[in-house]
Length: 633
Image (cartoon, rainbow, N blue to C red; front, side):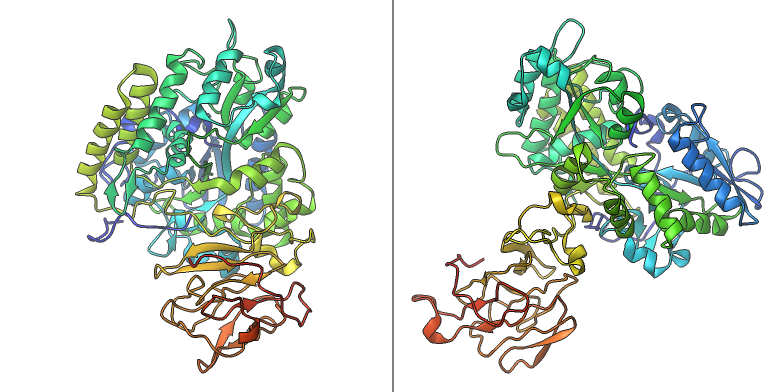
């Protein structure tokens, strides 16, 4: 696959276990972003590419020596495929420490022995795409499967509308803490840190001769970058913005300093135990640390390997004035376009992860909520998991209701972007470098690279954030209608279970592609669409009213359409709206009853334009008096 022609290469794209497979040295990975010799060879006939009738599948799950649940799932997956297909799948297990933190995969491609099927993360996507070894899956992925994935997930593995990987999971990050450690230190739930300063102070109280108060990943690599990005985002920072480097920022400097302070204050270890910073069982579970950052996968690890360990989770602490943030990671199946049978490999992937029949949905439910704990990446799988009560209580409920909705998809950077960031993190965290200088040095390297980069578009987590959907609990406490499943999803499309959904705000401001402000109706009970001249309820064109994919419609007029007259009537799904002389306008959405412009005698004094009122119930045919005045958007 050749490099793309010059164009806007850093652009928004709609877009989530990392653990040790993402750690390790990045020097071996810093090859040319436009291919280079490392990823240009074809698959061979031995350990890698297979012989056309047998496809090699390299992974770090199975068949493993421990024959655990995750290993069994992979073995069963291959057996099911092999029983019904002439081209067989042969699994090759590679220990996590060797998969990406070593050179096993890269050496195989360099020597022409790359596997037919393998696993990659969004953070390593551009390395393989720009190297020309990823097979297009679009032609064998049914439209029904594409629409079943949550918004943004396929886009993070796509280029120019073509899909090159199917995600198997979404993995948000959080902070785990030991209840026993808190009790022994005389601390309670009230002492759980909410800010960076509180984290350092509480960690100091939890630190003892044989225990550190807190731990973040210290080994360089994909995983460390992945875990550090949320702290950059909390200060509204990003490595790249509008196609230009933005890493030399106060947000980056303070995030680098926070991690540095945990080591400088001697409340965090310089090296993790076991499998690294994401291994909760070996670190938090063993009593070596009292608080540890890790991902949702750790819930299943603790469930199977430390059943009696008492723990809790909290969102990432934030800096003063910061906002909550987490990183939504997740591995994807990809096929080698240079392998012996890339077409069969593509079909296997779409069958394994994209099947929408009952068997395919159950297979994905088992992976995401039984043998492993993740947020399912597909709507149908989330619904099946909800039916089994997978996220109804405990840590998983908190992950999906409180933590995941604050997440951004993992950025898609080539090695020349994430390597300088990794160097900056390491220099500050372990070597005492000045955070300001480290950020500036990294920014200079990234800027030099961006000036000549000609690979696929680079996307940042903040670019990939998807729309916040309406909450699923009405203001009267009622549960949402079944038709509103789409409206019950948070950032990244993560679905919030009914019991954990927040009560809806009446209106939420959004920005469409034309840069016009809009407010999206949320919840079942809608009180009022306020506005002096409806300037805060615009749509893309004057007089246009449409749903933009929401179950409940987005209503409004452009800012220059100041004098709305007439009557608005909303009927059932795919009904029409009539706005004065504008004629019928398409409307998609649940039945809202009647929406009308209040007559002049019922308008609030001092408000120059018409007020819109919506009945409280779906079947009601009455207007509500305006609930109050809201400032124009």
